Amino acid sequence: EERDVVGSFDLPNVHVNITAVVERQKKTDRNVLGLLPPVEGTENPEYVMVGAHYDHIGHGEIDSLARKGEEGHVHNGADDNASGVSTVLELAASLAKARKENPQNFRRGVIFALWSGEELGFLGSSYFAEHPTVSLKNAIAYINYDMVGRLRENTLIIEGIGSSNTWGRLIEKNNITAGFNLKLLHDPYLPTDVTAFYPKEIPIVHFFTGVHEDYNRPTDDAETLNYEGMSRIAQFSKSLILDLLKNP
Image 1 (cartoon, rainbow, N blue to C red):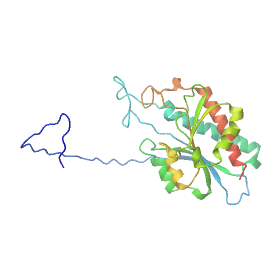
Image 2: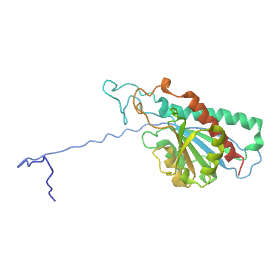
Image 3: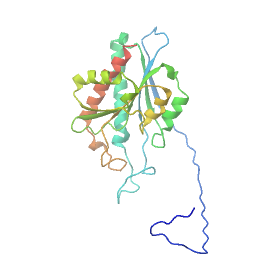
Image 4: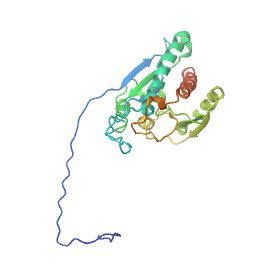
């Protein structure tokens, strides 16, 4: 069916050949996983999963928003997603210390995960979801951190709370001490690693401090981060996770 398009014109007796070439590149990368086991003697143990992606876009080969003069520069990804990775590492250290001091509170274990390939389409987390190291039937929640380094006006965005009717109560309870201006969003279908786990019927929640002008640009550097804000988010998360661990 022929259709007229504004500004179009016919090219009579002109033949055009178009050739497309797809170059397939195959590379290997790794997820990084850590386990904090539940208290000894726990039968059929359950787990809370805590994760963030550690990959970014290199010199801007994927979805770069570099402006004129920034092309080809290293995209360090301080907020996207070194902020999430450092939050997971802080939680791993802090919860390991808490378990050593009060092992009876760890009725569930914690799986810490740093995913690769998120920028290419959640490749690392999706692989784990299909080849888990523990049965996903025993994973009672997945908590994700992607871009949590730019807390502004004390506003913390928590997405995906519609994946479980318990999230709202737990979050509001733990925010009494944390004191954030919470923006709670219900939709669990999000453009980050939670997408690998919600279809597996795992309740998910995603921490986020919002987009900014340095997103996917070489200017997303360490000096732009709100470190005090990140520390508060980690402390708030620790309190939330401890509630999940001791209430099987």
